[in-house]
Length: 106
Image (cartoon, rainbow, N blue to C red; front, side):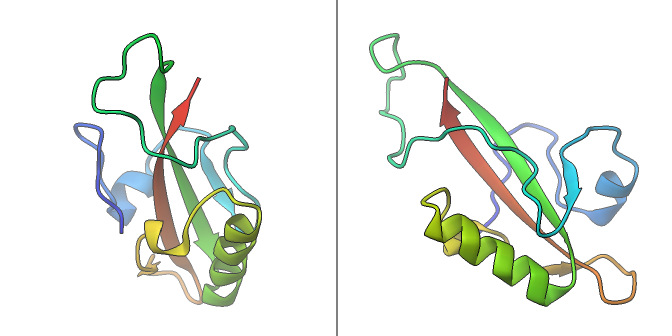
């Protein structure tokens, strides 16, 4: 499920619609192709383990395309299907949104 890990991060469609970031991408394209660790970071993320940053992926499109993209990213080993938010209606006809927040090792 989606848990905002960045202060001020929101999953509302209002903040997404007015956002000027380039991480919003139409489905089934992925908003980022950063490499990620499949294990969570240790409790003390010292220099021995590398630095971590948070990246947020957003999928917009028909529900079938969102589900397809989530399955594809799972098959590629990037993200577990349960790590994504439940699809949320954007208010536009036949358009849903799903969000994934992931920590990546730099």
